Image (cartoon, rainbow, N blue to C red; front, side, top):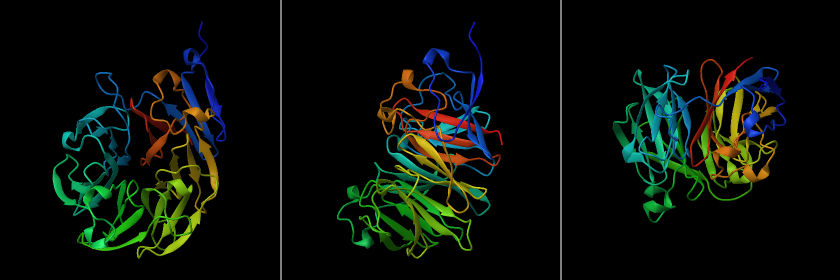
Length: 330
């Protein structure tokens, strides 16, 4: 008779279970950040693989969850319960990497960063293209569009836009509220204010004034800039290869490509690591087969988002496709 158990997992290590003896429920976290791992969330209705998940997760004002695949279903839409609603994006197949949902003129719209198309696109939530932004030729940084490989896009509260060229030349480009190019900042380097693979962006509204936070992945840190591109501060501890940043309730969730999700508090101090994979050979690897997946252990966290109830959705970079819901317990 198979024993069914519920385990509470420390933030600082991940459980190790044989594949044929995984518990029905796994809890991870501590204190105010305890979650239950839901490995069955976000499946395709026909039970087939999602396809390579190399993008982001976003939540709209109605609480619907969006995530990316490299298939014809480049944008997949689910209810928080895990019920599939719809998908779209055949024209965005392969390379849809950054995604954010914002409210404009009383409706939600989406901004998409596409590495293969070398552009950022504004769409409706149903995929109708409203506007596109090509490579920033006015910056003088690029000689051709193919050098521009944007990985993330966010909008400030006042409507200014920021685009990270994470897979290109490691610059962040700023645009005004009308979508006109303004300036570029960052650029390749290791000193404060410089970047190496600015993979993800977020708007941090926890302080006296909003700031842009950059997941400076290959410098193993987060950096904060004001909206004029001036360096403000950085955090370079407790991180491996941070891919993105999700912010809610004063906390940061940092999906880290090297096998875990890190939670930081309002002072950017470590709260805990979630789902830390103890097997270094499985971290930051796209080709991990399903038989090596374990509940409570991430592989290559690439994107994350919180919903209004404090549940956390995490997308692993994996060729089969893996998205996990961490249901908030407390």
